[in-house]
Length: 309
Figure 1 (cartoon, helix red, strand yellow):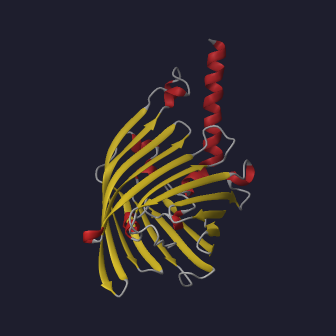
Figure 2 (figure 1 turned 90 degrees about the vertical axis):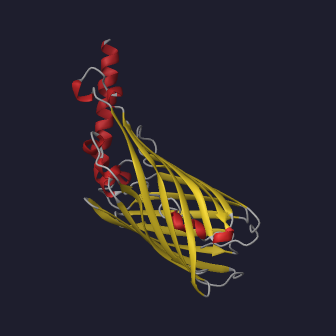
Figure 3 (figure 1 turned 30 degrees about the vertical axis):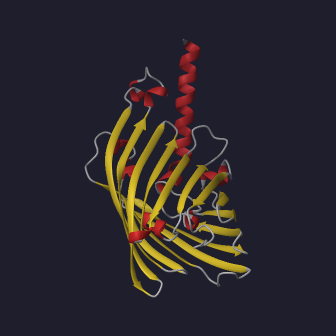
């Protein structure tokens, strides 16, 4: 019994220390943030699914502060099918975020429609709807201590939208993928920033022509959330023969990433390594390793026509 209590106390202390050391980082990061947004923006703005006229399946696994038990991890899956007759697309987004004893899962279906405005210029709009589930297993820390006795379970419906203006060489858009449609109960006092509205502003430009040996794609993603510091990501990727991509990403909360990707007409594999650039960053003090792996699969009649935008 004593040994069990000591283990429970030790686990609780460990989680508390993780939160204390990481609180500055966690408050600064945005919900479901990831480094390789320039290669798959759909989880943040589902209108992006209109750019590729094929069906796609994408999976992302992100692990922060590796080597620390309970450190944040994120899994994102999204897939979509084109609806060519109306220049549309429909799909599904599944996201799971875990930090210590807290879990947040979200499932959304979406529909996107593109409207041609000019020669190779389109305006895409999208709507998504689904459900979010928040779980905090505080009793797993110490079921006896009244401070950790009450777990939190919260289900919440969700709705969102995205707008994207795009062509073969660029896109610019705004989205609100998680619009709260009712006030929360207990969960709002536990991790309120998980349930706040997140406004995403994104843009990218692809330099060069198809068939060029080297092409460059700068991209930016900025996220605004009430009560959370404004965060902007800026990246530049060089594509060699449209097969090998090498890029660098800088985030205004003092984080950088190196990114590499390998693409074929059907499969794309990407990897990024993120590290803190400030001594006050958790990654700078305890671990420099935040790993992110992505895998994409394209299928359909137009797989030979591939855009790296």
